[in-house]
Length: 356
Ligand code: NAD
Ligand code: ZN
Image (cartoon, rainbow, N blue to C red; front, side, top):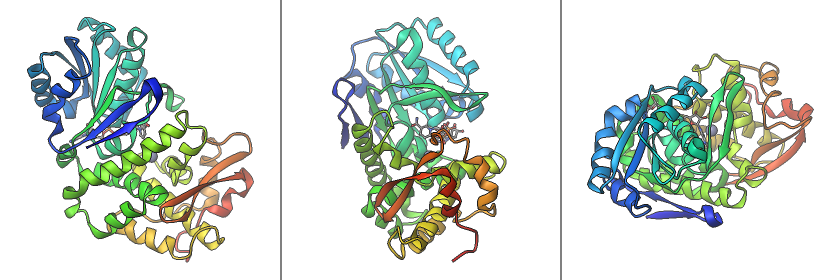
């Protein structure tokens, strides 16, 4: 099964399938005749799966250079990037060669950015291994690093040659990151895919493993369609930010790590929808249904912080231009819309904990 992303000369396919990791060599061989290939991964993923990927690539006649950086968001940094350049150079990688970014979202962003900029850009393939990376960060071509001034402050748009997704790799993902990813998965159901939402209502954390292929395909199709229509994220693609305006503020208000990104987005989606439903902008019953689903997957539906407390953490959001901002709200489950508003109206959209 594959999902085509149509972007003219930057088009590519996303392949989703259990066991695909062991066919990575044949797949990448179908894209290139080059001999050298660099595989960039973090220390966890390399330890778990590095040899399997190397074996698959070697069997397809690649000379494999495994380049490993220490796992963790703090290493999505300029220092790591320079270190990757050094290792790519020492491995003798040229512009004819290929790079594989093999890991979670940190690896995809950092490794993708290294590939997009080393020697002015090499072709690269994403093999995402976390839920977040499989449903979100590996598709769409945003690559980059964090700077001391903020997350994702240096980067570019650079599409991969292909994305290879093996849901079986999720079996080793720590529970914390499973929840994190589920927040984004539920978001896709909310913004474009009622059937996905219903599927999530029908399964639970135990039985979800047999459904990952379908879930990931649905999420990737949704993202692919949005990216095709708005590759630079200036319009329609913004619906992917549902829950993120309040979610980012929650992440910043609490010490980093109190709420994972996915948890903060979950609370953001439900707090916002509570208000828009009250205002009559959202179909009645939507909030209750959303809260119920979040609860089913152990995700928060509110946080203790009040609108007044969260607000200062929204005002420096990069999505806000001047006093005008765009909020993503739900019309109903499966249908999002963009709501332009003045920043001063924002407090009205943050629901208090315990409010009906
Ligand atoms: P991550 O890459 O740090 O992975 C989370 C943890 O899980 C790491 O410790 C990693 O080693 C481990 N891991 C990954 N796959 C595993 C597996 N199969 N088995 C066991 N352990 C595994 O973080 P993430 O949550 O995947 O991604 C977060 C990053 O993604 C952030 O930096 C965020 O900015 C970025 N992001 C980018 C985009 C985009 O469009 N480019 C979109 C959303 C998020
Ligand atoms: Zn997100």
